[in-house]
Image (cartoon, rainbow, N blue to C red):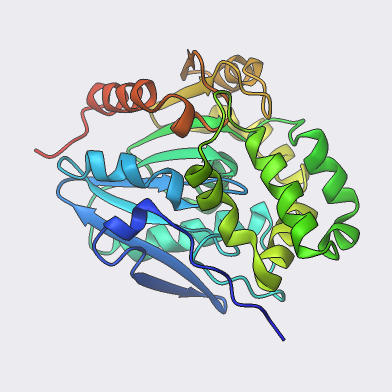
Length: 295
């Protein structure tokens, strides 16, 4: 018998209907929502996260933009069926398809803000699947090899064993792992919101499945193409990121050839929670610099 996933406490609950819409793609149900007024602005989350991390920023920018939040297949409120692959190749195709679906009513290319895995997803959509952006902001992203924490690599190599952990042991390991992504430390409610989607039989299986399918070949494909990205791009990084060290910011900027890299002090990988004011300031400044916002 499958244990239902508990409902995650989420800032998206405060939005009209939460993630109230569904896009059907290759048997998957991709949860998303849109609200606000102005040019399209899309937020991409990473792993093991969801749109929960970006919801406060989306609300803050909704007076200037029509903001779009979505959960990748296999994450958050989207479907987590075991027969569906969730690797970066699939996610890049899914994002390109979702953008095409949204774009029917836009009339202009979207601004995109991406974190963690969302970086590789948005880059793959642009460089391999012809997605067009007005601008791209990459925040502590997976883009260059090597990537993945020691725990991540251990789980990837032994995913079937970890998938059989008793629920209480799984939760303890999950909480410890997620906690290391923050430099300042997570509040209890933040930690709960981040781990709840991965609890229960379906959530636990989905958590280890997405790690098992992580493969650096998907970023290896991207690396020689990064210089071809012809869109205004900014790279932001938490200076104390221990998951993807801050030296990647300079390396990524150099590979892109035209993107300025900026480090945010007192922030780890979960920069949205560690340094919300600094990140919000950087995002507003970047979007103003590229001339974005409600006109």
